[in-house]
Image 1 (cartoon, helix red, strand yellow):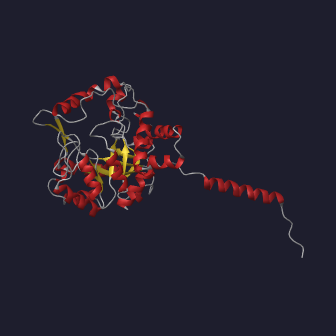
Image 2 (tube, helix red, strand yellow):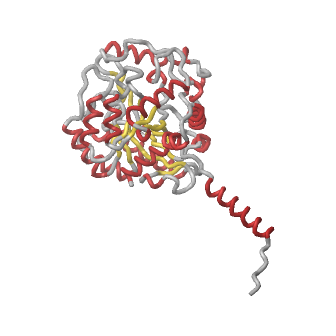
Image 3 (spheres, rainbow, N blue to C red):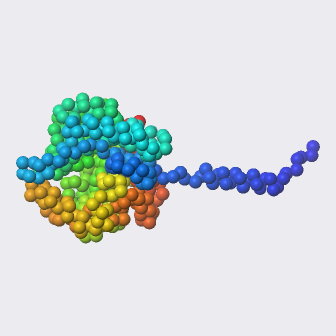
Length: 367
C-alpha cells in the first residue's frame, strides 16, 4: 500500500508553531510583588502605579498622646478603630485598583491588588480577646501585639524594661490561632517575639523590621528571633526605614541587600520578604525635600532624643538619614527587584523575596 506523501513545508511549519507555543508556555509569568507593610493611599490609582499584586495594609487609626514624662505615645483605641476598619472596607469595595482579601488564595483572584487588613496593636481589643472575632468578622486578618510600647497583651520594643506576652496576650494568641488571624510580632520586645514563636500553632510574621546583627537596636530582630520565626514557618519583611538598616552616613541599596543576605543566612530564603512602612509614594517629608536626608532626619530627632532620655536602649547615637533615596518612591518594588538581579540573586530567590514567601505564609495561615 502506497503511503501518503509527507508535506515537508507543512511539517516544518507545524513544528515551528509547536516550538513557538512551547516557548510561550515556558515563558515565566509576571513576577509577584507583595508589600508586607503598606497603607491605603488617598489616591487609589497609586496602587496600580506601584505594581503591587498584594499588600498587608495597616488600617488602624492613631491617637498621639503625651506620657507622664512628656514623651509621645501612639494609641489605637476601640472608639477610633471600629469606624476605621469600616471605612477601609468601604474604600476597597469602591476601588477599581484593589480589593479586600480574606484568604491567601485571594491573591490574583481578580484584577487589582489584594489588600489584607492589619492593625498595628491590640489596644482596640481592650481586655477582651473576644473582640478579635469581632474585628475578624469585619475583615481584619493580621494583628500586631503592640506598637513600640507595652500593651495589656505584650511588651513593646521601645521600653526601658522589657517583657514578653502577658496572660492576656497568651489568651489573645490562642484566639488568633483559632480564628486563623496572622500573629504579627513587629514592634514587640524580644521576649514578646520569642514567646509568640514558641506558643503559636500557626506561622507568625514580623511584618516590617530589620536585623539587629547589623544595627543594634531593640526595634530590630536578633538572630534568635529570626531563627524562631523561620522555624515556625513564618517570615519577616525588611522595611525602608534606613536608620534601622545601617549606621553608615549614606544609605544605599547595597545596605538593603546586606540586610536581606543576613536574614537569609540566618533564617533561610523562605524567611524574608519586602515591606515598606512608609506611604506608597515614599516618606512624604523626604519626598518634598528631594530625599535630602540631612534635612529630613530632623523631623525624627525630637522623638529619638525623648526615647534616649527615657533610658530606652539603642537611642544613644543620633541617626543621619531616614530613607534610601533610590527606594523612596512609587517604583520601589521594581527597583528592589532590579537591585537583586544586579546582586546576583537567582531568579527563584528573587521571586520568593519579592512576593512568593508572603503568598505562602498568608495562604498557610488564612487558607
